[in-house]
Every structure is written in C-alpha cells, then in structure tokens.
Image (cartoon, rainbow over all chains, first blue to last red; front, top):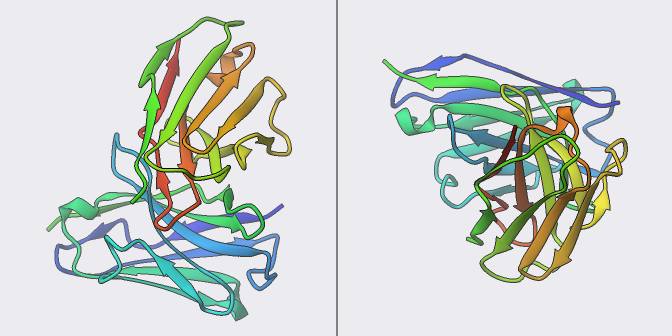
Length: 120
Length: 106
C-alpha cells in the first residue's frame, strides 16, 4: 500500500521560499498511472488545490498561485517537491501531498500533512 | 474557477440516523466529483469517486449520487466513527476545487 510523507521546515519567514518534499513508499512514482499533487488547508478553512506533476515532469498549477509555485519530481529517489516563493502570513496552512489516479482524477492516498507557519 | 457549495454546513445526528449532505457546483462537472471524510488533525480520506463509486475499503453505508451540478452523499446508518467533516471536490476543470465542508456531530 502506498504511503506518502511530507517533510520540510515548519517555520518560514515572510518573503522567503517555502520548500516541502513528499517521499513516496510502497509504489513507484514513475508508474504512469498517477499524478502527484499538493494541497493546503489554512486552519478552519477548506482545502485548496495547489497543483500536480506527472512522472514525465508535466505540471498543472492553480492560477491563483502559479506565479509563485514550482512542483518538481525526483524519480530516482521516488519523491516530489513543492516550492512556494515570496510567502506571506496568508500561506500559513497544513500542506498535504497526495496521489491522484489518472483514470478517475481522484486523490486516493494522502500524506499526514505538515503545518507550515509563515512568521518572522 | 468552479465554486463548490455544500449544505448543510453542519448537522447534528445520532447513532443510526440517516444523514444526507448536498454539494452543488457552479457549473456542470459531469460526474467528476469525489467525497472525502476528514477527522480533526488527520488527512482527508477518499470515500466516493466519480460521484457514485465507493472507494475500496469504505463501508457500504456510504453512498453517492448525482451528476451535472447537484450531488449527494448519504450515510445510511450513522456510526460513532462517522463523526467528522465531509468535503466534496470537483476534478472536471482546473483548478480542482473543494467545498467548504459539512461537519457531522453528535
């Protein structure tokens, strides 16, 4: 059974770059059947889809974040990453990585989530 | 962006109750809708995909229906472990968007 685990700093200063990595175990990120996605959820609010990447490197991003977001994939280490530039307090949230089935466009496996706080 | 609305925002229910949650999309999304359950401090868990398909391992008391703009999630007989927040999500059009959630409590 696939497992996803987010890692990265829990505290980022305003204007700096948020960087997170999602390590995938129990399945290959190169399988071709899945996209690899990032979501976030500010406290008490709904989930927000950030973007996704395929093993080929093809990406789709939320237009609201597109100018600041980069998602990349490292197939040799079975992981993918999120970078969000120029962060502000509004980027404080729990960040989740997840696997999306290509066939049914559904997020079927999620990491446990990691809280990132933007504060000086 | 496609806006997702859910009703009610919260529902108080008892063990054994039938609970129905509604999700409405601001434009047609065919059957590209999923339902997730989230408990406090935990990641969302997929319940239903493509509007009416039960995810493997999810109890059969959960069911989904609808297409186009109007969808429902039904819990036929509420169990103690079902007290949680439920979200709908559309995957018809980028960016994928989620509903605001429906909290089911005692």
